[in-house]
Image 1 (cartoon, rainbow, N blue to C red):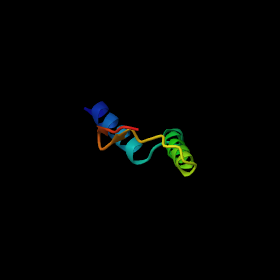
Image 2 (image 1 turned 180 degrees about the vertical axis):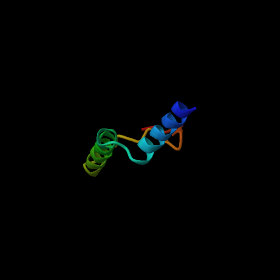
Image 3 (image 1 turned 90 degrees about the vertical axis):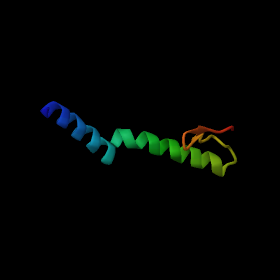
Image 4 (image 1 turned 45 degrees about the vertical axis):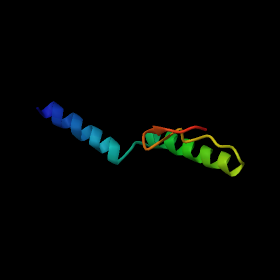
Length: 55
């Protein structure tokens, strides 16, 4: 039971406080998409609220 609680707590803490490496990759992708959008290139998102959209 303690192991289960420890795993749940660990996953919850990672969700609430992502590590530098986990959060930075998503942030880089968002910044890249924004930079490309400013220059007229549409790169996404491909999924909006779980529904696939055409490019």
